[in-house]
Length: 427
Ligand code: UD1
Image 1: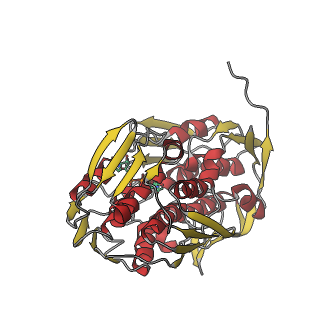
Image 2: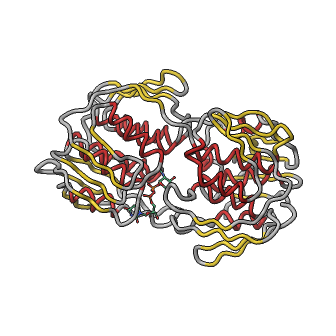
Image 3: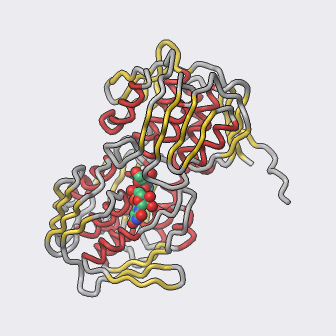
């Protein structure tokens, strides 16, 4: 069994460059379906979720050439199938992002129904309701959703009940090829949606308002392939910023390769916690906080505090001078991380979707298990400040979204390594 072993208590410093944004790259890869021909994506993170999306695309007939570690040539000319199979959707829910582009190009898609996952139910009802409004008919059988638009897609106004990232993206990717104009009201505003709309517009789409709650899409006859660079990963950046706030040396930790505007609310909350976040070109420099102040945070759709930073900031608040409350509004079951942090000595009580956190003086290294992607990374970060050694297992979660996480931390001087330990005995 592969684990990450961290020896805590060593200061870190220097510069770390973040990879391209996972949540952008996955949707941009799906969007290449809309433009027959060879699209080149640059700054693609080399992470396992990207490999899964690659398999989804190859499975429907696309070819992918790895030009270099971060550049993919994706040729969707010969896509001749419409199915995202169960074994891939079960591995990565974001595979459902091919539904919109398949409907946009072919008027049909067959997608395995995503099961429950460890972040709660994560339904796709809003994707379906929105696409139905555009003229798509759905039926489900044998665990698959069959989607067809017998009369093509027709633009209309769709009001989302909640600003869902995935629903907004699937709707945009279908609507770019609809007849007439689609308006998405209460659209999600995440930077990754703006990146998607930018690439689609480069391909010839007519999308205005991405990044605002009202997105207007005028359908076009065809889209053409382009070369596009994925934006930097704001969540990876935020994770390293938290590491720097905990263990940065006097020179600090400089995190580059992303836009600080994309992390506005996180930086604001960190500053309220007493952590100085200096804007530098292409990133942020952070120093170790002498004293961490407690803070109240609630996760919200962008530009609110991102749920994907909740676990990392909980590590900080667990060491604050006083009590903090973190409220999770986006996902059910996203506090599993807290019970692992408690094993390291944190004082956290969960009540419904609130975490009550009483700051302690320090963590003690322990064996812990990654509950999910962000929680796993946050446990490694907690290990940096813990006494003795922390061993984090189930690191496949971390590999889904962090490229060379251990190596990047080593580059900052952290005492962290991959290790192999015997599998626990099964009964
Ligand atoms: C995306 C991100 C994820 C991030 C999340 C919120 C990707 C690959 N993942 O996930 O990292 O944490 O945005 O910023 O980009 N919901 C429904 N019905 C729907 C759609 C969503 O009930 O049809 C619910 C979900 O169960 C969840 C909430 O709405 O509770 C937010 O989901 P959504 O914004 O769609 O997140 P994802 O696109 O799944």
